[in-house]
Length: 111
Image (cartoon, rainbow, N blue to C red; front, top):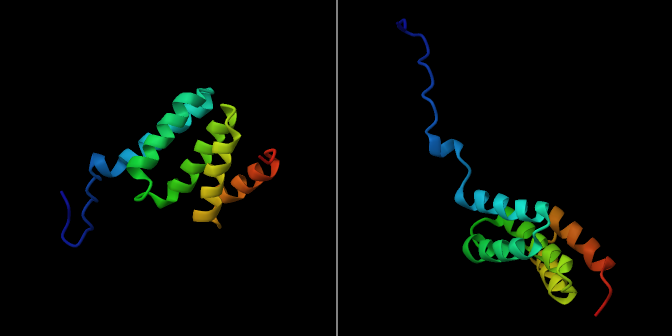
């Protein structure tokens, strides 16, 4: 029994408040494919993620472009990787993903 003037117990957060967003879940699933070395599937997953969430999830969009470039680099498509890395640098110049993308651009053999 609560006493008068005692703080009420905080209501538990609804389950949806604790669950990651669909965008975050899809991003993590895409990254898991990279972690497994399944670059072809990861490339497709990140491309799909960018199509669906790229405009709304600015915090992850630069990272998604970076990982898309990484996948394309691993798949032996350096020109496509460069385009993805440049997208990160141009659109998210102060992000950590841009720092990594600049490094990769510097290490890839010029076309």
